[in-house]
Image 1: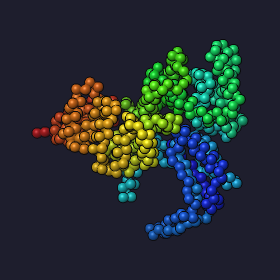
Image 2: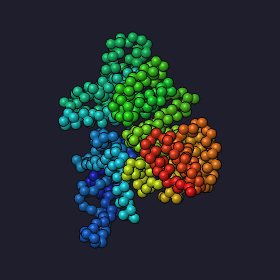
Image 3: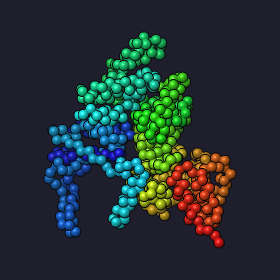
Image 4: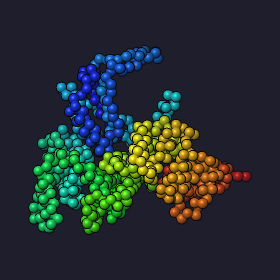
Length: 143
Length: 419
C-alpha cells in the first residue's frame, strides 16, 4: 500500500527560510534509509506559497477564480511530501516516526495519507476490475 | 497503546529491522540459521516487554543488543567448544565495544548482500531459495509465504528448515562470492527475485490472475538490491523491468476478471509514477556503459510499450530489433516467439508466421500454449480461419490458467466457419 507523508508548512517554510544544515543532513540520511529499504517511491519539497496559484469555483457551474499566492494559514498548506510503499498502515507510521522533526520550534507536523490503489481495496480480481472500469469511465468523461 | 496495537507496531518494526538484524548477526556468527533463531528470540522478548515498557527510541538497536546478549550466553553455554566459536566469541566481544547503531548503519549493505547471496545459494533448490529469501530478507512470516504460494504453512516451514540444514551441511560460508563467480551468483539472485515477481504477476495455476504481495515484495527486494549492488547493470535492468510491468497492474483484468492483453489495455490507467521509475532505472543500467544484459533488454522492450501513447504508436521495428539483441544475449525459443510477434506487427503477419513455422519443431515449445496461440493469431489475421480455430483450441487445451483458457476459447468462437 502507498502512503504519502505530508510535511506541513510553517511560518519559516513560507518565508522561504532554508532549514539548518543539521536538518538537511538528517533528512538526507533518512531519505537514504528509505531508499535502501526499497520503500521510497517519490518525494519532493515545494516552493513557498508566494509563487503559488489557487484556482477555486466559488459559484457552482460558474467560472473559476484564479488567485495568486502568498496564502495565509501556513498550517493548511504543505511544504513537501514523501511517498512510500509499505505492507501495512503500522509500517507507514513506523517510517513516519523515523522522519526527523521537519521544522523544530514545536512547529513540525507530518500527516500520513493513504494513496488510493485498486490493490489496497481488495485482492479480488472482480472488484479490482470494477474499479478499473469505473476509472476508465471517469477518464472518458474527462476527454 | 493497547497490547494488540503494540503487537502490530512490533510486526512493522520487525519488517523494517529483521533483514538488517539477521544479516548483522549472521556476519558475527557465520551461521544464518542461528542468526535467525537469535533474532527471533529477541523479537519474542520484545513482544513480552514492549507492551509494558513502551517501544524504545531505537528499536533496531534494542533488538540487536538483545540478540547479541543471547548469542554470548549461548556461546558461554557451549563453552566455546571449537575454534569456530572461539573466533566468533572474540568477534562478538569486540563488537560489544562498538557503537551498535553505527554498526547497524555502516556495513549493513555488505551484510545484506552476503545474506541474499546465501539465501539464493546454488546448493539450494529454487523453491528453497525463494522461501528463505522471503523469510530472511523480506521479513515475511511462514504463514504469509504459504498463502502467497497457496500451499500449507507446514510445507513452507519444512522447506525453510531443510534449506538451513542444507546450507549448514554444505558449509556455505557467509561471504561475498569470489570475483570469478560473482556474475553467475548474481544472476541466481536476480532469477529468484524475478521468479517471485512473475509468480505474483501471472499465477500459473488456479483462478487468481494476480497475487500482489509477491510482486510488491519482489519489487522491494529489487530496489533494495539496486542500492547495495549499484554497479551491476543487470540489477537496474531487473528493477526497471519490474517497475514498468507493475505500472500495468491495474489494467490487466476486465470487469469479469479476465486478462486484458497489452495492446487492448487502457493506457490512461497505467501508473505513470512507476513508468518514470522504470525508465530511470533503465537509464541507470545504461549509464554504467556496459552492453545491456537480458533483464535490461527486456526492460527496454517494456519501455517501448510504456512510452507509446496509443497501441498504434508502438515502435514495433525497434521492439523487433531489441528482441533480436535479446535472442543473442539469451538464446531461447520463447524469445524467438516474441520476436515473431514483433516482426509480424512491424512487417505483417506473413513474416511472423514464417518465423513461427520454424519454431513448431522446437521441443521446448511442444506443450507451450503461447505457440499455438500466437500462430493462431497470425493465421486469423491472414484470413486462414480454419487453421486459426484449431490453433486456438489447441492453445486452450494447453494452458493451466483458467482465465487465459476462457480468453482462448473466445477466440475459437470468433473464427468464422467456412462454407
